Length: 399
Ligand SMILES: C[S@@+](CC[C@H](N)C(=O)[O-])C[C@H]1O[C@@H](n2cnc3c(N)ncnc32)[C@H](O)[C@@H]1O
Image (cartoon, rainbow, N blue to C red; front, side, top):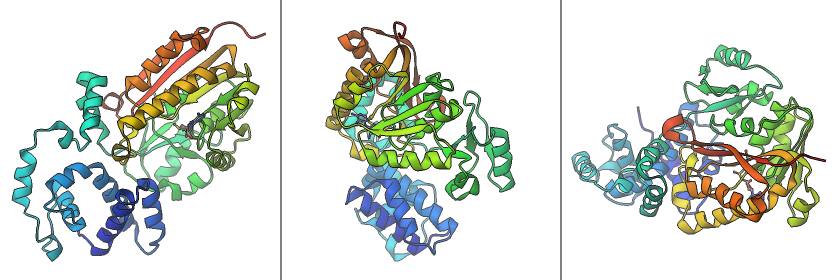
């Protein structure tokens, strides 16, 4: 593949914003591409892909590169990918043989997987033998997965429609609404997206709403709805009948949910900002189903958000665990007796997952609940994101 000076500069600018200004990789790439409308499709995918991959391998690249200069870092990355460097003066400091020798002498698994030392220790202590294969899997590039909006089309119809435009997809057993792209593609530009025929949502994430066993006409609360990925799926599973109360502490995210619902032809989602314990108390025993898609470390979705590795710390993970338990201690009061609840995270750490559920069940707040089943979805086994999904029943019958 031929390298172009201006697109490499585009990658540099994006990396600067991510590492020096602490901005989120996905937002930075979106902005970089938007501000350079003259770049063609190939240039755009080069910039997006290279930026993501350089963020993913940042620690290892930094170790192997002769200096911290961006040209050296890019050149090192380019060689690591098995490519050859053109004879440009910008790459004069890079010696491919020296780089290869340095790579082969690395013994530290955290360096080889390009993760912080503390994360390797934590992963090993939580997942034991499964950790190394898991982090290896989480360092792979994510597939693009679509969730068919069954309110507007069928999987078969959408598959054919996309194929007619040269976008080939395949079906994976166990994920009834999913289509996986054979090749990475910017599907947001496709008319079928604008018509609300699909959402982009990882296959593991699609298991969450499905686990809640919703039915048309139910009153459902999605208590951490964010931009609405799962709420939209719930509404589709409910055939747009009943009500989905989409709640979050960050009201601006719920605005996104509203816009997405309109595109998807959904009318049953009602956004509601959480203003404190009052909001929760007022909804006491009002829901047939409750989804707690709680904030988490995001360690299960590193494929999609590789910058998470560099933003997390032991302290930030502890903080998020505290929030998870606070939510578990208070929000289940919104569920009617006899109702079902799903607790979900996009983390693979037991301390955010089954141990949180156990702590809840052992506490006063959890005494009326029982665990029906849980799924520990690892990337190394599923081939998709890492997730945890627990289904719980609130004992008793509703009056
Ligand atoms: C994993 S994200 C939710 C993703 C969303 N359900 C989706 O499918 O797109 C967790 C959400 O919890 C929200 N959150 C954080 N603290 C919360 C709290 N105490 N109560 C409710 N939501 C909270 C965050 O703003 C974030 O949107």
